Image 1 (cartoon, rainbow, N blue to C red):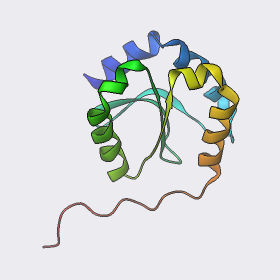
Image 2: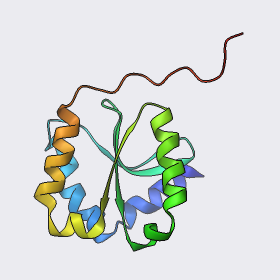
Image 3: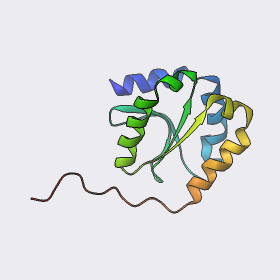
Length: 122
């Protein structure tokens, strides 16, 4: 089900997602391979670099009243070793160079340590 959703989202990107993808595709930033609208667990993330475990989310106005859900989603991704970068649509559309620079800095930074083991010891 998540795969079908990802396919549908890839076919209908927002203006901000399409603009950012034009900068991220074909290893244009730090020679990093990013995927768009990729399923990770129960979620579909906007962009992800699996090798560096970095997720990039582009949020529209609807996210202003979904902050609790976004926080839970971010916590789930972080608990699995992903770093999550969030940008507003207007930031992507109005300052693509600044957004690309922040993503490049994250890709250059040393990777986060692997997530701690889940659960207790037996």
